[in-house]
Each structure stands twice: as C-alpha cells, then as structure tokens.
Length: 119
Image 1 (tube, helix red, strand yellow):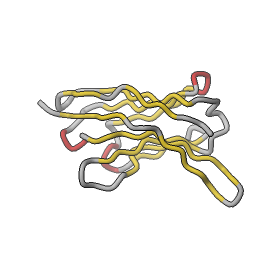
Image 2 (image 1 turned 180 degrees about the vertical axis):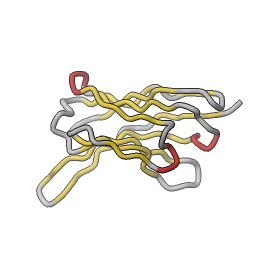
Image 3 (image 1 turned 60 degrees about the vertical axis):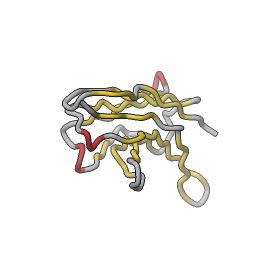
C-alpha cells in the first residue's frame, strides 16, 4: 500500500503564499488520481483540488484562480501552490491518492499538514 507524506504547511499572513508537497512511497504514474483535501475545526473534510493520471485538474469553487495543483511523476510528488491565502483557508490539508481496485476505487490518505492564515 502506498504511503503519502505531506509537507510545506505553516503560518502565513493573509495574502501570502505556501506550497504544499505530497511525496508518495512509490510511483504515482498509474494512480487514478491524486488530490488535496482540507478540514477546518468543526467542519467536514472537503475537496480542494484533484489531478488525474492524465493531468486533468479540477478545483473547488472557493480556490479557483488562487490555488494550483501539479504533479511530478519523476519525483512521485504532487504539489499544491496556494496564493492569496485568506484566514478562511486555515485548516489541516490532507493528500489523497485514489486507485482502481476490483469493484471500484480505493483511497489512501496522508497524515495532514496544518496551514494557518493569520496576521
């Protein structure tokens, strides 16, 4: 089973930027998709952005134009570039990989990285 390790979170002022990284323990080339989710205190986990094996991307409405997801198959890594951060973006950000298995799809999660946007 693949393991995912996130990094790059931290404290940033409103309007600032961060780049999150998600390193997989094996090749991501054949993964059905990879994505970033986030969970704020007291709220459900929600999709932020997703990228397929063919590099097709989709974004939550609340981040369009501010965040960019990308992948580097050679480094087995997916990135989330976050610009124009707002206090409402404060959350734990989780990396997700989705795989085709018999009968459907299977998800694997990283441990999460905290992003705090505050002055």
